[in-house]
Length: 145
Ligand SMILES: Nc1nc2c(c(=O)[nH]1)N=C([C@H](O)[C@H](O)COP(=O)(O)OP(=O)(O)OP(=O)(O)O)CN2
Ligand SMILES: [Zn+2]
Image (cartoon, rainbow, N blue to C red):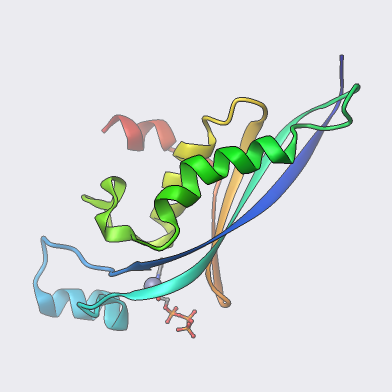
């Protein structure tokens, strides 16, 4: 039996490197657009991803979803692929700049498949100064292209 709807959020940390670069424009244009982030050797971040889900609070368990289930899912779908990876080498970023906006979009695609609650928001902190939110808008268009 289900009770009221609640939201839960969980944070996952991964370290990854990337280079912001677009093949279609010149080296000078890349440097102008991305500055130090276009360094050919890349650079790294300790990312923090926060995923937020909603769902009915199960009357028997008191939970929207068991965090242990979410952790197993995140380990398999996110951390095994992203932690200590070069983002530019991952399939999703073969034709996309590995900006944090695009990291959010890719994490949305992953976590939207979690079967036990409804994904509401993906937040990714790239540095201590910036964070990016994605709420799934335009997701179908992006993935059907
Ligand atoms: N719209 C976006 N702009 C930038 C992104 C991004 O993902 N989306 N990413 C970067 C770089 O990856 C960069 O490494 C962050 O650079 P910067 O903003 O200079 O870093 P901070 O000042 O926040 O932190 P430091 O660790 O002190 O450099 C750039 N722009
Ligand atoms: Zn960066």
